[in-house]
Length: 126
Image 1 (cartoon, rainbow, N blue to C red):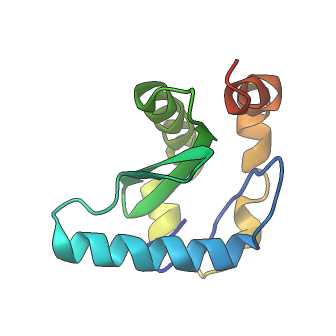
Image 2 (cartoon, rainbow, N blue to C red):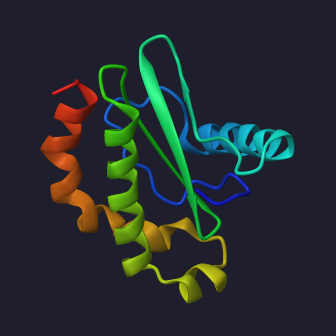
């Protein structure tokens, strides 16, 4: 997700909220958090799930999992996905981006094996 709240890519197994609406909310929360504390929002949890947020090269990566998954494991997964994202879309592509999110559609192929079954297990707490 861009800092402005534009969701570049989303992989949601059970969508309940529109991607762009969620992105706008997360961007607003992160902006408030950055005002209050250096580094912004790093995680939060709801009654049944945990969210982890990592910022790299002005892109926010957000992942969620069940509460049974440790924060460290969730952060490791975000890190792997972020690294693959910047291999596929180097900084110069991001800098010249014209706000057309369709250029990121094929990112799913890069992480398909990472996300297909492992993330379903990950989401369900193994």
